[in-house]
Amino acid sequence: MEVSVVVSGSVLSALAAEVAALEGVLSGLSEEEAVLPTRCAPWDVAALAMHTVGAVLRVGPMLDGGARAPGPLVSAAGYYRPDVRFSAEVDADRVGSAVEAAARRSDAGEPGRVLRERWTPLRERLAAEAEGRVVVTRHGDPMLLSEFLVTRVVEAVLHGWDMADALGRAPWTAPEALDAVRSLVFGGADRDVVESVVPGVWSDVSAGVSAVRAVTGRALPGGGVDRGDLERAGVRLLALGGS
Image (cartoon, rainbow, N blue to C red):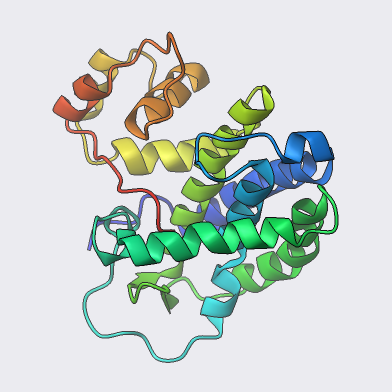
């Protein structure tokens, strides 16, 4: 198992900061904004919001889970490996469930309200968990809770960018959340080599965002970062889609 990219207290703080920013945006959506298309077709903003909120809150039921699954612990990076979780059947269920949830919403701000109401008690519960707590994901991965929370930061940050781009807004990414994602994506590569490809990637927010966007298929026109160069520098490419 790879070493955890962040300690549990740090990753919980990062997730809490990103959730607070996300909740503020989602709670204030208009109906016109909710139906805007996103790069995650066929999801509009409302469906993507439902998916993202569900991804963040998924850890709650996992805490109620029973004995850990057999096998070695899976790291946050290992969670994003290409396997059956990206099959057509799993993908169709993931896409369809978010579309259906969005269609049932009472208004555009519902995802934000749900996140606000359910996150506070969940955060308190997470803060009380032991450092070495192991959970089992819906894909059957036994993971340290802290490692799974890293994946929740990834989901909130990347889909936050998807929604921000659809809404025509500047990203609301919390600095500590960006740090967690940056550490995961670039942590397996040589720091100096990555710095030579993207100067300022470790210290500059704009450079860090541009690099992560490029690696995760979210580069904006004129972003100035080449995904191929980062891949050749040893940056890990995450399999995204079934989270």
